[in-house]
Length: 316
Image (tube, rainbow, N blue to C red; front, side, top):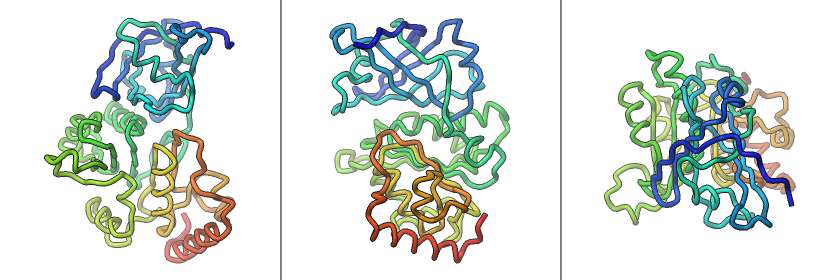
């Protein structure tokens, strides 16, 4: 059995949005706060708990993206969903849902991760940033826009497009904050729900978030973000995806014919696109392959699609 975790942080606030969706605010102890005060929007930490009820299962730790902006004072904020069908016998969320404000827990001293604007396209990249969030995948993108506004209160957010998918309207966490940023700062925010039959009063977009990139819907998305037909290309936009394999794969497959090349070295190698500047970046919540690289027929078709797209788009 693994050694129990030494707790170094406190859950100072918890907001339950639904029975299975919550906001957790965690304050590190004084000895780790200096490390937590110097991070970049889009990074993550590892949270952990000991299983006190079943000690034989030991402790569990999981990486969690930070919602907070680095420029904010106070605790780190996390947007977490309860996992109903966990792969592990000791899932962290099942322990998190049993604790309340004042509970002690573990929070890794270092904040890490490369899913940042600085480590992908560069902080000064002027292209539109399309952020594709499935459920709690919204976390790093909220950190992006919060940080941008903290650094410059007068900054417009017209260059950010946030597509947020959830099952029901109640699952669209931070919707009020997003709508306020849209009204006041020009953020392009398009929430969508995948179970509209169970939400008859919903008047917004429907379908999964990756459905925005279906061929029959891509032209409409271009129109809504101010692009001409066929204008959504790497020369004018970059794409960031946070979620499970299905969201990443379908977004990638929908945009490959437009010339968007993933950052993943394995995918770029399989696409014979190693020399091309990446324009699609993702943070994956599971370990399933984005596409089956062993499927030669599929990969040959994807390489063909990319060659045709790049013939119409100058390489950056």
